[in-house]
Length: 485
Image (cartoon, rainbow, N blue to C red; front, side, top):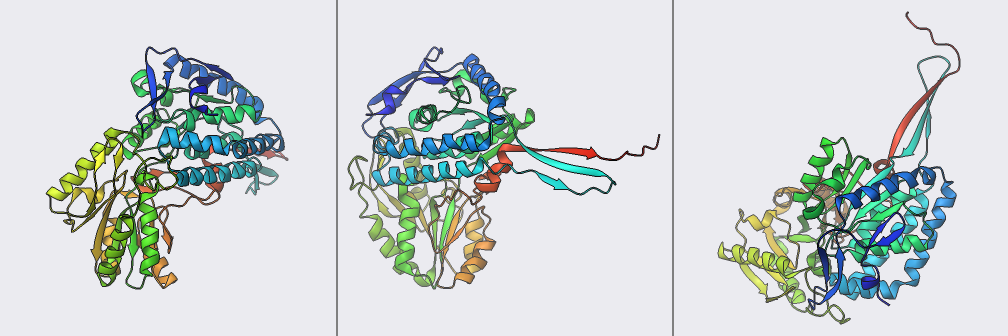
């Protein structure tokens, strides 16, 4: 069974229906180029219907016992586990993800559903003292109401669920707009799971549409109080600007240009393994991926030789083949744009230590060295199988190079001295960084987010509670206040 054709619909107010727009979003297999399905876009009116339905259903949901709410997430987890094989096939088909990538994404998604069960019980209030005699201060933590979620194409199931499940668990309604390239795995599949899990109709709505059809209506609509966006920094800047003009809060998880730093005392073989995974998992289409590998000159020759040799063994091809390491990029446009950046870097003086071909959406790994210090490619997010190897002399230079980017999402430091690694990590301008590990990590209770152009706000654990709830102060005067007039 595949969900890809079955769920090529809008999901609004508990109903599966066709959109009423005048054109279709065509869902395409990025490896074969075959058409999977066509979904008629949702209009501004349907976005309005979705938000109104969520607002109406949310009031009763917020009043529901949180122990009752958590049962929905328990059932959703069981459904996900029962359908794992079918969902794996759909991830491979719609995203071009390999079997390893599908396993990784499903593991993260299951962890997020487990965390959502706990979040149902985490909206705790407080009692605070008062300088006024006889006064009691109560702080109530309440749902914000409705959350608008815009998710990306690279890890669509997980990154949609990462906002949708916690927002629902905390008593909110949700309207989800998945990326046009992954409307099912990132959108309607999630609606189907929650529908079967018994989520009340109207609480979760999925609108498959495009800015060409609705403009900024998804952000500007008066119902949502919080907009959660995961995607590029360019689009994130626009989302933040529009949302701020309507006094809405935003949670923005944006791009990255992470550096994996190999110090002179690092375990070189282990650092090679970490760097290869950190760059090439899911074809490098990961915001936390190690775009840049910074290597101390003392070990640069050994590391680079072993790194290039390992990258050369990665198999590029059909994601349905269990032996494939690198499948297609999401579409040929992305592959061609990244190939052009590589060509420009080589023309400007970089050396191709390893370079294959680009055919359609398939792009073989590229390893570039000898990059001029002012090369524009050093400061960009590279959303594909391209990595830059940069030597450095000592910790200070490593820190300077790592921070020489407008992004600050993730990173890693490899060293035999853990505390040395922590000292270097503290100097890197990122929201997250890992000592003796890869750059790609996401755990459900640890705050996730970036600095600089990599985003605003955090998700996971207590940070998610802050993101999707509001605090209300209610004071009680048990005696009589004295007023000056």
